[in-house]
Image (cartoon, rainbow, N blue to C red; front, side, top):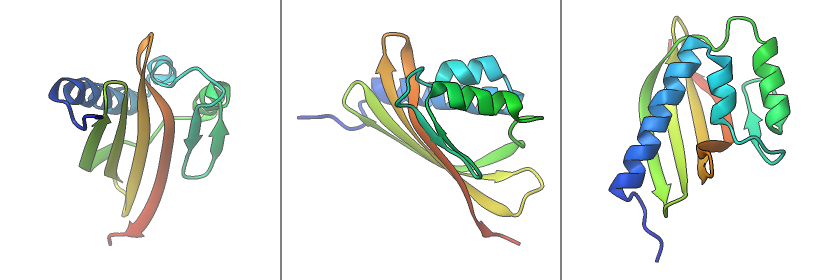
Length: 128
């Protein structure tokens, strides 16, 4: 039987999610690249782009001036699935923004540690 939210695994993934928010805010491109699984199966759907494979994701980050706008996490739900997989879903508000953003990620444990295999970012309702 598969265990959901094993406390040890949940703590590991929570720490990785916290780290992701930090390096995203710092626009630490090398650290962001390292957090994504370096495989052609890795996918990132952004607000205005669909990226397939680690190389496309890295190229996008390098072409974007200024990085991701600063944001405040409004709500986050982390669910671990067994010992080697997890989902992270969060809502955020960009600094100075009026639209709620959503981000979902699938994390997997690899030989190099926890990595993002799939990510999706979107903006929804205007809160003003």
